[in-house]
Length: 213
Image (cartoon, rainbow, N blue to C red; front, side, top):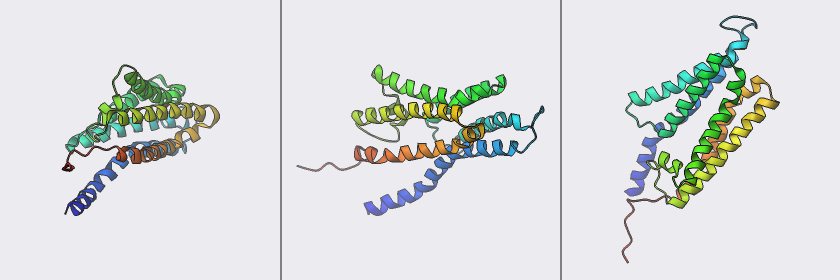
């Protein structure tokens, strides 16, 4: 009965997991689509031109990210703190780049955000607070050493992604940089999946009955 119940629960949770994937992928996909559509417009001055493609795409990304939070709120779903933090950073820095009409700022924005994430994680560990655990302890129950390992892994991941963004910006075209945002989402999913075995290995199951001696 327990195995059948677990399978039923997993099947019921599948649509929710798919929704979370699209919540992550959707805004980025819209960014890429809007950017490539605007590239078909002529160059020059005007509201809709090839030169404004990056600004419109960034605006669409901000709106879609906000839409994800609103959708979760309407459905009564819990909004993860990490999603709130990332949405605030994307909205803030994206808006600054659009207002200043600075493509340089938009190019460097992902690096700033990734380095901020890494700084928060490593800064928290330095003062004895595991921010990664605070973000995700409602979803997983792990021993402190496992949370620390995951925090260090993700901190290093954010540093690597920040550096990778600088490489894309400096050595590749604007179009490559913009379209590779989908690649970044893919890298994030791959890295998350790579950490699943470690997480499952150290998962604490409070409902598991204790074995009598």
